[in-house]
Length: 297
Image (cartoon, rainbow, N blue to C red; front, side, top):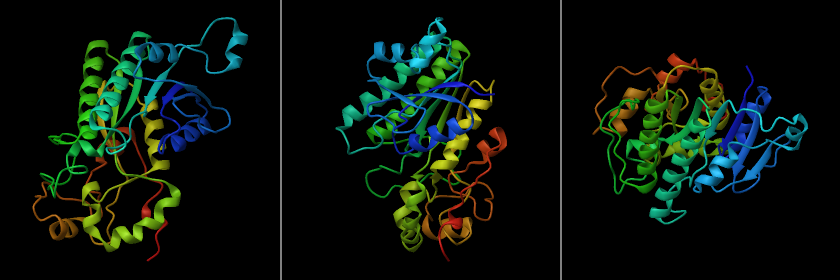
């Protein structure tokens, strides 16, 4: 079933792959961002989502000029996908990163539920697991990293994402809306697979990402599957690809390169340390872009 979707942050690294995928699936998309997305069939409404009035207005407007032809006002919106954010630390001062990410997410979710939108997907992050932007060499408490892990970031970005998950949960409990938070791994665009040779040669360089990643195109599939799956209330899903970024089997690799992190259940031969078992079991995700397809050797 096709949907009318408001997508925030569609001009960003992940969004510029997800939005075209949704269009190809027949969905209608309005992009909310501070810079335009140059893609046919998508209007970008320049919106500061830290302003609650702008967020509310943006979720209750025509998607384009064709909407005026109906004479019935803006058509209902079926879903909101909220990816807009300061995308990492060291772009803005820490307090601004936290403020923008937390306030914009609150504003988007609040406006959506008060406008009667019953499906919201938000971008959380692998940084909630506490190692990506940690001070010093911090070990993960255990592997695999699954959605019930005790998240404990010390940085402003990861902390903002934990708060956003709590915000989503609160609104889902209050309203009964479906709000799914995606803990997105290190996003890899198609042209970035040439980096994997370095990753494989220098395993410590990938510890902060838990030797996991998400192909931007597979992330698009995950978002589409979230939009299609109703009735789950509040959920957190790891959004990563299936396999570890290493040529050794996962358990042997982790015992060598992460000896301080116990393995709490048997891992698949090359299972990613950030486990995507839940999105496979619950949403039916099927990876299409294993890094081995693109990296020689």
